[in-house]
Amino acid sequence: MSVTLDCRGRRCPLPVIELARRIGEVPVGGVVVVLADDPAARADLPAWCRMRGQEWLGESTADDGTPAYSVRRTA
Amino acid sequence: MPSSPAHYPTGRPKARQGYRARVPPSVPPEGPAPPPRPAHLDAASGVPLHPVARQALLAALDDGWADPARLYGSARRARLLLDGAREAVAGVLGVRPDEVAFPTSGTQAAHLAVLGGLAGRRRAGDRFVHSAVEHSCVLHAAERHVAAGGTAEAVGVDRLGRVDADAFARAVRTPGTAVASLMTANHEVGTVQPVAAVAAACADAGVPLHVDAAQSVGRVAVPGGWSLLSASAHKWGGPAGVGVLVVRAGTRWVSPLPADERERGRVPGVENVPAVVAAAAALLAREAEREAEAARLRRLVDLVRERVAATVPDVEVVGDPTGRLPHMVTFSCLYVDGEALLGELDRLGFAVSSGSSCTSSTVTPSHVLEAMGVLTHGNVRVSMHRDTTEEDVLRFLDALPRLVADLRASAGVAGL
Image (cartoon, rainbow over all chains, first blue to last red):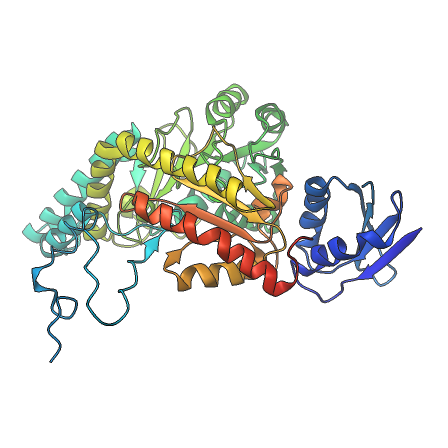
């Protein structure tokens, strides 16, 4: 089960806020993928995972070249 | 005609002398209380001119205006002033006067240290090693070096912003390393770097070490063992427009700029003698008060670290809690727009800085916070100086929790 959040064009701290708002849409063990082109997301999303005890899975690239960040809900 | 003392402040103490001990002016019978004096809490960017520097500057404007390279009376007076300033700065830094030159800023000093050091070691190699959290002036010098065909390696830092001395030593030992650069302490989070250990590793490898001491000179003792040093006068209470470049005797250094005989060939153009004299006067005054001020500001910083963590939810106080500069503390507030926070703080009279990208001229977040792996948004750097009072800090600490809560509420992120 996974959900993809399209945060393209949204500046910091909006991508991390969107992740916080919507991680509850997946069950524990599910994955949220955040598409974000704001460079701050690369630092802020893993830092949020650490502060909230969620699992940071890492970064890949979407078809259009946008960075795609994956987080597994653990709590 | 209004006649309250608030309109005719003739009986109030003189601004400078009464700055600290001043009692708040009494509230006039009608009308709101005057706003509290603005609190400059961005000392890491620059501090007001030290009172001693102001006196020295005014005197030197009259006595030191002439070209110190000429041979007539006014020129000799300027030369004497410049020589005296150089000796004073050299004395504080524990180096010889002829090793000290005065560029026009700390940034230019760092550019000259790095690029001149690399040019002087061209035969040894083209590798430049630096920490990932150096000031942008060092990173920009590295970019220039790479664009010209050289190579550069950035050594990473831990969550507290401290470079791994062993990893740095390994990088320096890599064949072809020409110069290494490590700041004495970080300008955004205050973490002190292991300069002594890195300097020893550099000496073993025969690689000259540049230290960017801009945040340390006049604040804390600067460790030795380096070959090149850069610093900036307006961080210690001198005027803007004066940097310090030290090239230790025996260090290979070739100017990256067109030839000029000034400053032993290290900085082109006629020296700004009055500003250099004022910078040296400020540094001597800072040295005399350095330890007492460091102890006073360390207590205030401890107070900020404790109170912010206790009173603001979802805040990350970043940087080393113990191995740090005495006057600086940095924290990040989750979900908060740093630009909005700085704007609100400014409205209340608090001048602070931020490493958040939305508050700087670039779209990229602070490379320092990024390298540490901490939050980059909602970031506030509080840095203090000799005019900072406990009252300023308490007022800031009283205002902050409400401001952050209001910003979170208006963004609809409270309780997320």
